[in-house]
Length: 234
Image (cartoon, rainbow, N blue to C red):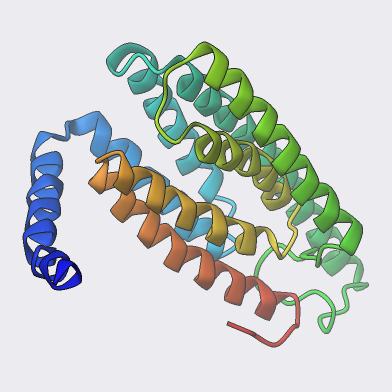
């Protein structure tokens, strides 16, 4: 009987969540939408191996850093966005350097099209077992340490999951800049956890954005596998 009662409450819960989502959409200001849309544009262009993705990343992180510091007073999140802004500049510099290097090979007639496809920037490589181990261990140890620090100094929701996903996001950003194919697999897991975190804290709009990001990460993984000359597995 208890299970049936819980099942009957599901439509009411769904209606409540939908109302909450619509309320958040209505309450979102211009800067919120600018940060949201440019963030989605960044992921989409990165999935398509387009260097313009870093410009949208810079815009999104700059706007969100401003919102975090001055609108929501989220200092740690604001500092994370500043880090992402700096990494957007690193990404532009690194990917442009790869494009110039590839163009020199084309001009010199030494480019093997069977190894580096014509589209994209090339140099997409799979991670080694050692890189996976370092990524996972670094993310877990760093996340647990950050979570412990925040649990002792701040009152926050989902402290450890939030800290672990933050550390993994930082590490995976380096994997994306380094053009590691499996960065998209890490983003899929990270975004799924963020869906749970945002939904649990009532940030339904951002939970929906993370669901979209999961789909884009799957698309990005498939696109990058094609450019790396590997068959798709997803």
